[in-house]
Length: 345
Ligand code: DP6
Image 1 (cartoon, rainbow, N blue to C red):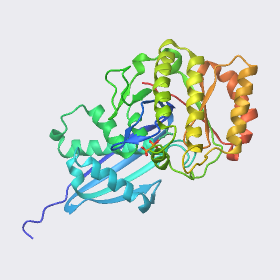
Image 2: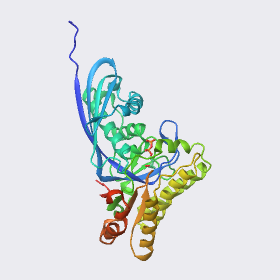
Image 3: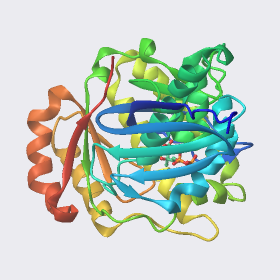
Image 4: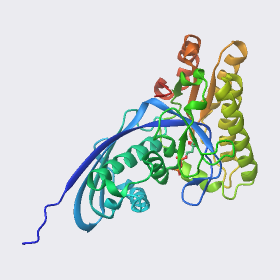
């Protein structure tokens, strides 16, 4: 009785954006390190908000997770893996009761990558709790630390801990690049690429048949693995040049090649699979035809799913938006198109 101690409570809330990769991360090595560098930009509207509450106890860490207000025990194993990996950085994760509540500002299962924003916001909230409890154990660069911790939850999420254009993965072209964390490359980017629109065609809303994590694993034995790594490195070089010089045509070529190659790799994996829907292909055909017939700066990319991201400078909205509304919206499930854009500081 006499040694009964009051349990300390600490809470933190953090927001993080989703991101869309132009050069794709596809294949891993070690603990969540990429086999090739990738480049993405963060989105403005699509974000995840996470509130974390930690109550100190003498027991080993216990976790509870809520998504949009509902308890989700199915996520606990993934979160246990994350908290086990993060204990080395954040000692408070060794013991206590941890309650995590996340919600998205965008529709669930809309095809917008939610693991990136959710892991980045969670890592940020964890970091804030550690700062509340004992900031002295955090003497490293906190931006790098945050990105690295997010990566340990989901690779692409290390590109969601900062705004705008982010490079993740070692490339000889940029000295400070790293496989461990994302690096902001906004200083290397021409102004036209800071005003990009990203309009998302929600072709299918449902959960994907094959997760990205499984897709990454299939790259380990993929017959085209070496060629893919070479292609990605070459596309990083081309993309960095296009971003620097403001060359939209070169940007568009890399963007579309990466999108189609990603899905080509899925189709040529063993076992093979496809995540594209018939409407995804029809939308791609329509976009290509529209680009042939009009002087327009417009390109598209795909994530690991059937939904298309149409990317274009803001100046092109007058011509692109009516095209989307008339020709592409009817291809979407419930006619759903999400109009988002790059988030730059
Ligand atoms: C196609 O980051 O979702 O979106 O590290 O297993 O969580 P895990 O995978 P994830 O993979 C994203 C793959 C991609 C391309 C990209 O965002 O670079």
